[in-house]
Figure 1 (tube, rainbow, N blue to C red):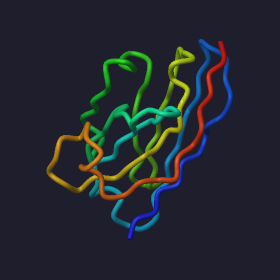
Figure 2: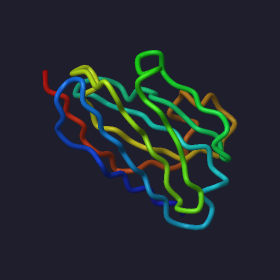
Figure 3: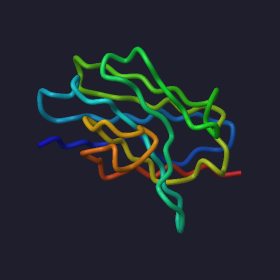
Figure 4: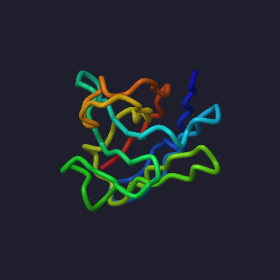
Length: 124
C-alpha cells in the first residue's frame, strides 16, 4: 500500500508563488509515475501535470504550462509542484497521485493512489 501526503498549500496573492510537496510512504516510490491534479469547488478534478519515474519527462496542462514545474526526488520519496505567477483561477484543492497503470496520464483512472489534498487559495 502507498500513502501520499501533500503539504505546502495556503493563501497567496495573485502573482505569488507556492511550492507543494507530496511525500510517499513505502520503498516503491521510484516505480510510479507521479501526477498532480486540482479540483475547484463544483468542478471536476483536472490534470495539472505529471512526471515519469526517473524524472526525465514532464507534461503539463495548457493552463499551467510555463508557470508550474514538477520535479521529484526519489531518494526522499517526494514529488514537488512549484507554482509561480499564480492566478485566482488556480484556486483549488491540489492532489498528488501515483500511477503504475498503462492509461493516459491526464486521466484520473490512470492513478492507483491519491493523497488527501492541500488547499491553495489565490486572492486577487
